[in-house]
Image (cartoon, rainbow, N blue to C red; front, side, top):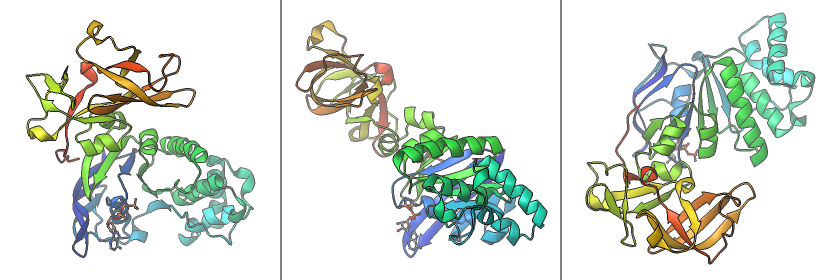
Length: 362
Ligand code: ATP
C-alpha cells in the first residue's frame, strides 16, 4: 500500500532547481533511501516531506490526505538529523521522554514508554546518564528512540550515521534496519553512501541534479542501472565506451569485438553507448594464449593489486582501456603486477547502457 506520495514536487531557490518535478510513491512499512551525490536535492526533498520546507509547486500526499501546507509539528513524523540534536543538559530518559512531555502524556505513561524504548535500543541501564557521557553509537540510538517515542507514522533520517567511524557505522546500519523491520515503521533515509543504501533499503531512489534517475530494489538497480550515472554511483563498475557492431556485438575501445546479451537501448545515439560489466563478473586467468579461448576474452597485464585478504581487486591494463576484476587470492593464485592475463567478459554479464539515461518515474 502506498503511504506517502509526491506529485510533481519542485523546489526552487532563486533560479536553481534543488528538486525538479519529482513523482514518487513510498510504500507502507518499507525503508526507502534517497541516494545521490552532494547537492542533488536529497535533503531538500526530505525537508519538504517533513514540512520544514515548502514546495514551490507540486503536492505531498500522506495516507490519502494532502499535507503540502500542513506545518511540521502537525505531521506527526519522527526525525533524526546528522547532528542528532539531543539536549545536552538532559539525561537519556529525559531526552526520550521530551516529545511525550510536549504532548502532555501522563507521567506514568511517559515512564512506561521510556522504559519500553530503552529496552528496544538496549540501553535500559543508562536511563539516568547524561547524553554527553554516551558513545557515538549510544547517542545515535537515543536519538532514534526519541524520534519514535510518539509512535510516528513516518520516520525521516537525514544522514544519521555520517558522524560515526566506519565500523560503528556499519554496525548501526544493521541495528537500525532490524529495528525498522521489527517496528514496521515506514522510513525514509537520506544518504550519499551507496553501500549504506544497499545494506539498509527496501527501495533506493537515486537522485541526480534534483531529479529521480532511477527507483528500484537495491540489487535491481545494481544489476540493471538505467544510465552510466546510476551504474557508476551504485557499486564498482567497468564502464567502457563501445560502438555498436553487427547485431548482438559491440567493439571495445581497443577495437576488439565482443558478444553482448542485450541490445543497446533504442533511443541511444551510437556515441552514447556504454558497456557495463561488474568486477565480480570479470573472470581472470593467468597467461596470454587467447587463441585457446572464446571471443569474449581480452588480453591484458596486471597493473595493480589491492589484496585485503578476503577479497582481491586487480586493475588490468588492456589495449585501449582498463578493467577492474574482483576475485580472491585463492581463486587465481599467482596474480601479481606485470603478469599477463586473460580477462573473460561473459556475454550475459555485459550490459549495454546509455551514457545519459532515460528519465525514470516511480
Ligand atoms: P548534501 O548531500 O551535500 O547534503 P543534498 O543532495 O542533500 O546534498 P540539498 O541540500 O538538498 O542537496 O541541496 C540541493 C541544492 O539546493 C544544492 O545546490 C544547494 O546548494 C541548494 N540549496 C539547498 N538549500 C538551500 C537554501 N536554503 N537556499 C539556497 N539554496 C539551497
